[in-house]
Length: 234
Length: 234
Image (cartoon, rainbow over all chains, first blue to last red; front, side, top):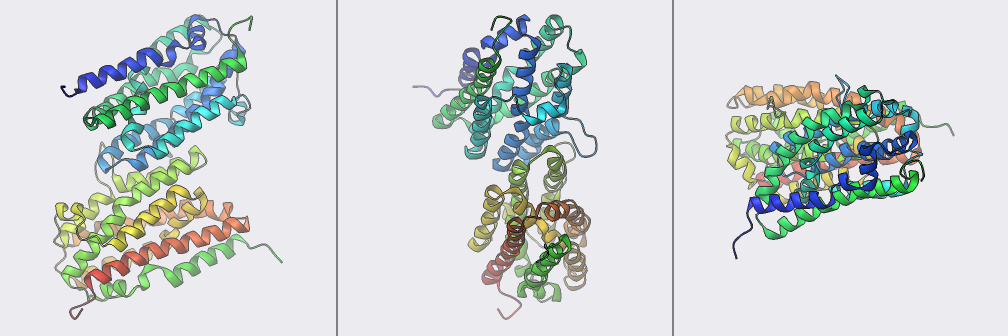
């Protein structure tokens, strides 16, 4: 039997996204269709905050597990992009607070995490634990939802602007910035995975890691939907 | 009984340094006195490399455990200082390779780690495990050997220039840079420890963490001395 190639692996990864990426979740479809109430959108932003605030935590865990300095120099940009810097401030988490304010949530309400559903917590905490405890290559592979994110981010900005005119469009800068940054992150991580996954066991672990990550994102929407419902009648 | 104050804690931390910091280790005293052979100095640089390469690893582990973004923005500078950046290169590890070349070791010899004694490995690995598994505050406190480092670094540059004229002084840039950076790092970390350690149990854990870190540095010199000896007669 011939060896599975890099192209095969990329196909497998893309197939995971086609089946399980959270753009297909009913809550997500409703969001893009303009069917969410303001309170449901706030519920989503507040739940997703718990994911956002843990991105640098899981990325620092992966940073600590990377095998060499050259890879750390690449990976550390993710943390700087989300946290901003001591000198310049900024960063994705800051932009998430701007989104929260644009949908009518104060920073205090978001930080208090009172709207965060237990299911969101369990899913995100599982993701952090995965990053801390798995070998670095599957942990890196779990980030490859970034292959699918730029497309979704572009559509999301369009859909939110068109369907929720009460949201200040400046609040959507996080998603606009992610179009470029997610592509940059995926471009950096994908070659490591394609090269490192020549071993079939590692390849399977990488595909499973991406599936796991899709499950994390999906579970956040399940928990949000369970807590807030979809549309006026729920 | 009155509460122990911040000043008391700082005294306790300084007392740990006065008793146990590695400047008092016989190998270290011999180094500064000019009694080490070139091969012994090479042994030290090669063993200490294993510590140097793990500094960003332990700092990324602590970064992942820090409780908020503001602290991460401070702490991440340590990793950037040691690893350098994708754009500009540089960093402390790069300067350590320069030191290695200045004492007659090629990058390949250093990276191969053939001179690294098992005792050095055990000590450094214990330090990384400590950073990964301990609560963030004692982990941060373990870095406070930086309170004592600037003084030692200044003396070390002077001693190496005076006693080992065969070493290219450019190779000592790592130590020159650490005079400033260690002070900056200690200035940032010390207030967290002094403030967070109001609880006596936490205070004790922080003092114990600094003692542990001194033991790590001491054990590296023990292992180096056991493998290479001190002076011509050993």
